[in-house]
Image (cartoon, rainbow, N blue to C red; front, side, top):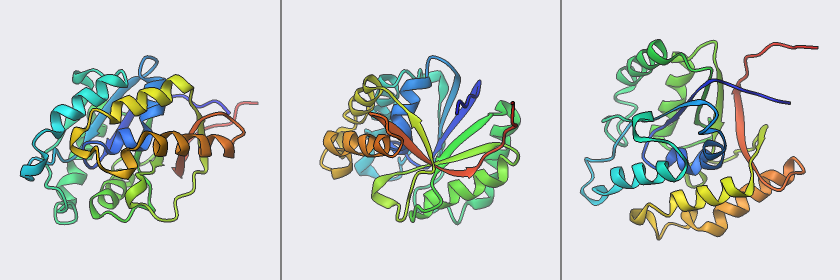
Length: 210
């Protein structure tokens, strides 16, 4: 099956979420589609995370996403449930301005409160649009990819290099290159491919062409 979208939105709660969840796919399509990467919180209320904004820009550059295609919001980390309505209105405005054809957001099996709000409000704001859920290993339980997208070895290595830009998180197990590569190998094996990035099929909108 081939799927396509000329305008693709990647939506994450925090810097690093998009790269962790779909960095290989993003590297694969960055030169072939109009990509917009939106992160709802810049994490700058935490003094220990003062470098993550610059690390995020460098990480995205490794994936082929220029700074003008990156939007960082200022919603407060861990308080997304409190700010749910404001987040919904922010996403409504994104949809009005950009009309994405595919939206990638956190899987519904993610237990982080911010990730869950991002997904729920995306489902409301982008009605009638295909929505696919990505996995952030540390905070999702019960994730199983129903939608597998082939990526190439070069895309895998770009994802590894992108996540290496986060010196802030260099000691986290889910940033380990072996963990990153093995996840993409395992998801590839599900589709009898060398590498794949896997997603939850939250909503698929399409038509059948015989």
